[in-house]
Image (cartoon, rainbow, N blue to C red; front, side, top):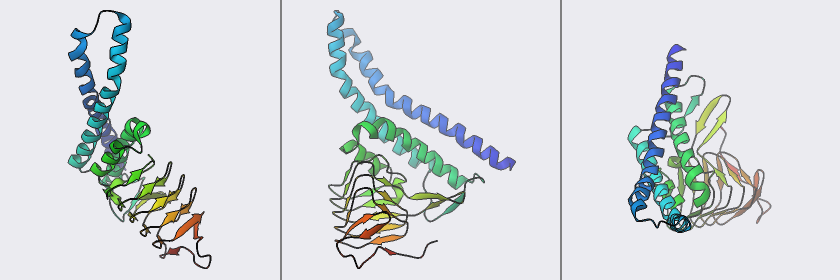
Length: 246
């Protein structure tokens, strides 16, 4: 028990240090830019305000890009990953669950600071790719509720709607359970849908808004699904195929 507490405290302390460094690195380009242009700013107050307002967007973009690259690099360098196919008891504070938690918290900072204003843009897609998600060409992700990027894959031309929750983990009976989510090509997932772990969605499949795809589900290519849990609606005789639960 003492060892578990020590691991937990070390994980918290190391996360705080790493996150502070990442935020500092992200703020550095903007601070240097402001310092560099300060001597050349006009003397009139209103002119200074106009110049700074015009320069605010480029500075924010530069800081966002820096945070994306620095966070993805730090996560890879420190080896904080989401273990595949694991059942990790939370109260034991083992290193796998602590690594997963630290990875998630660092990613969450990017979601708040970059994903919220830039979701659906190349910047958000860049972070998902750098953080381990396998993404084809023309993938459009308009949701920040995308978690465990290293366990996710999206085929060419896939569209993820606003506020879709899609992750590679679930918490059950005090344990974190992980599994991949594979989304095929030209798939559309509607607004507010929830996708469980160990799910495969076939090419050209459509999932209606506010739908729930349970864990271990297999959605057929070219079909249309909706509901909670989802059922195939273009052929009422068929239901979502599901492997035996674990």
